[in-house]
Image (cartoon, rainbow, N blue to C red; front, top):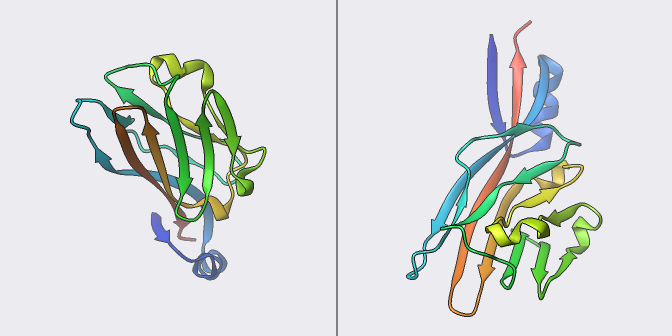
Length: 154
């Protein structure tokens, strides 16, 4: 039998981990889509990827309809800090994400504004906000990553 428990506390997961044979996966949930008056919106693929701590994570996000984002400001942040900023064709990583956050600059013409996080850590769990700004529009979407402990009863 397998049980999945979503936890918001590492302390709780350690206690449960002692009682059961367990393994950890991270799950992404998508929420809060805001469409603009111009008919353009940000879209995150509806699949729910699972990945592990230490692995690389791509949060797939693109403009719909597919328009170029080359001259737009693309800002990824979490609830407390900037993760990655793509502005004036320059990519800047947030201090807490140095050498770990990047965007797909070669795919901006296709409207791809996805975020890649390398070596995903426990401290990375939480909300991620993508905001795309151009001269006449501003779009925002939120993606949530949560810790899920899978327990196998022994």
